Image 1 (cartoon, helix red, strand yellow):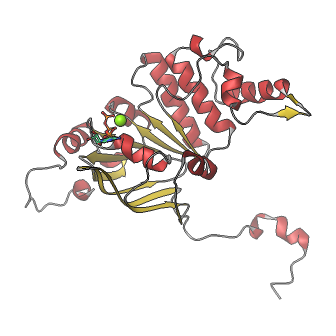
Image 2 (cartoon, helix red, strand yellow):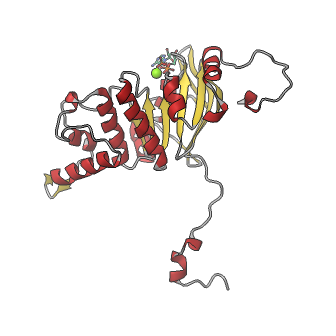
Image 3 (cartoon, helix red, strand yellow):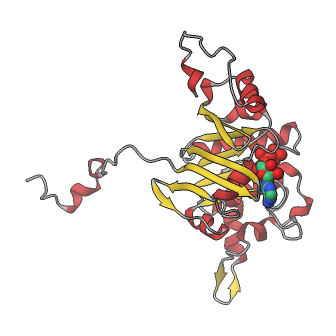
Length: 279
Ligand SMILES: Nc1ncnc2c1ncn2[C@@H]1O[C@H](COP(=O)(O)OP(=O)(O)OP(=O)(O)O)[C@@H](O)[C@H]1O
Ligand SMILES: [Mg+2]
């Protein structure tokens, strides 16, 4: 009988159960958010798979930050559903979001200037040895995590974060997400204030996170960034998701058109089927 397996049989690869097609890491369905008369989000759908970089783009005021704040537990949506690995969840506080394994990296608010790198990475989750902080263990983990991400430009992990460049700050914030085993990292305009080399470093980190199997949701205005790292593109226009799909289905012109007009292509009756016409 096939069921009378002994323990040793269970350790082989054959014992791994084949789950059905995995649900996406995160899925938003019909998210609505109002601020008084302002309808910031109007039935937004979004899929964020694990192992990929999803770029969320849109013009100023499109609703990108409001949308990620709904995921991060800062805003509560007025309607719609959030599914995490296929299960419906309620994210009411930043803690709820963190508990799911979601780490949000904000441009400026991510770190405490007066603390050093190690202190920042362990803030609120310090490691102890008996009654004391286990500084050595924390230093080791911080250094290992930064090294594993090939972040090599910081002089000392004991330097205050105030003395870091913008790119290095982003790198530390991202390393923190890795250190805490996050499964989804959200970055809101991570490269907005960065120079060329620093931008490159942050984008490489985003890529590396995805290659490790994390989901990455990258908000950006910068189409260079988007086309350099994104596997998927999603375009918000005045609170509506007007296009989303694999990055290969988009080019710059198309993204710009969606961002600025909410639609693409002006010939409604063009019969010949461009597969990307429907987004
Ligand atoms: N706390 C708030 N109270 C009222 N209205 C808000 C609030 N936060 C955002 N909004 C409105 O919601 C809309 C979307 O704002 P959001 O910050 O998400 O835009 P965005 O896409 O992130 O733009 P940007 O690219 O400029 O950062 C805007 O019209 C904004 O004025
Ligand atoms: Mg914003």
